[in-house]
Image (cartoon, rainbow, N blue to C red; front, side, top):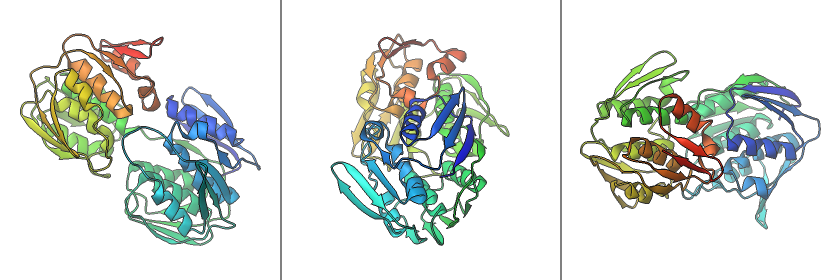
Length: 390
């Protein structure tokens, strides 16, 4: 969106970032990735197509639609892939872009979108989709006139997008509320930005410490971003202490069952539901868990059962009866967050577990095995087979 060199710090070394780098390079963007710093060199001419071989790996690739429409007025994007956790239609993206004046058609597995000049509009999202909110913010930043996005997603990542775009010269306010206003500008300039800590990574390690009887400090963090999880951990009886930029968990490995459901932010995040379900398999009592975001979030349940978990599924509700112990087994990772849940269960189980990952965990966790080893986990990554042994 901004010709010149932009610099982004605190970028994780994960597969999804690698995939996005590949995609940017196909568009003609120069990319340098050194440790956790990303330098992006954007020329006056950029490409307009996001090819199938990249988009099928990661559905977030659809996020190039808004920027390319704003910059070029046209884009060709393959229909997206990603984790198989249920229906995640891109209708919200396409409907909003149409309201901004985009002509859209689908042919041969690709989306073709074109607009001579995007026009500001009043957009009412049917659901507070994070991806759609981000895509529309980026497109509207270079539109002619004022855009308001109502029922916008409120996640911290939306605030990040606003802050970065405003550093680039955009005029956006309201991120973090359900109404975002964007006053379109003619062009953007490069910027330098440091990415916030990943709240799902933070939450995964908090749950790992809680269910294994750990005493762990996570820093740096933004505690308010995981406030819903902290409240639930405290409800189970686990001690959680919060500092300005750190969170401390003190657990003896004994905790109570509790009920919860996933909701859009600031509710309990769906991306932590599998991990805390793993924790509830060892809780005292019965937990009732409801998934409200994705239709197929429970693909890991059969693998937890192989380890001795007592879980009954009815539609989007899971009833988890805590057991006294789990036992190690050979399990297969069906998707990213399910994989994290299986690792956590294996850490708390008796005996050894072999986890056949297939590349899922590397999509969303930077040095997952190394960080767990650093706090005492007995885990080995077998690179040759793509398996982890705990």
